[in-house]
Length: 218
Image (tube, rainbow, N blue to C red; front, side, top):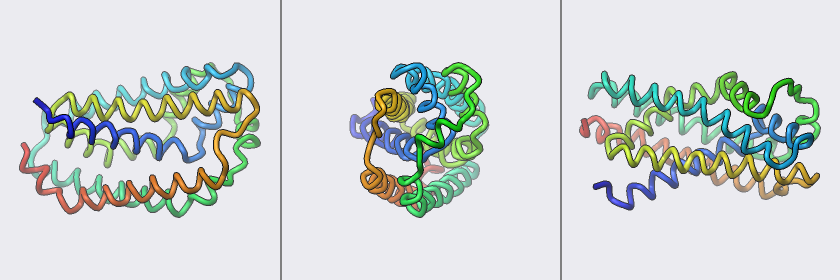
């Protein structure tokens, strides 16, 4: 039986990582806004479904492929690389918070060429996002493997938290912009990015300091 505190930790971690990535303006956000301006508030849910399909495939590859051949030295290696990447991502988010919060999102979204449906847009903007792939191959895989050592239900809690953040944010974006309103003020956006970036940097350091604990679990 997985302790409830471990499930809560996995859920919160998944949510925080999800919202940290979602708040950085990028192709998926621009696609969501552009589609919502034309098709209404449901666009966020459709874009998320495409994004979730891509991530589900990545999760399955990590669990079915890596877990079956992973060894003690490899766990330590993944934890170290994952910690470094998480720490650097946190610093990047902090450094770019002010600029990201002040991005002219409406202007960028209307210039974003959307030639496919919302589900396809979610798939394409995910597959062609090198940051997403790098994240899940390093820090993301380290986190998933760590949760897997606790139990598959912990992995499910992490994924659930991550997808709640993704779906909730994209739905909030499409609902807000379909009505011609800005989701949050630039100042609030900036503050949230600082908090999320700090969380990721701290958790990355924790990974680096505890990588031996991960290898001892297998």
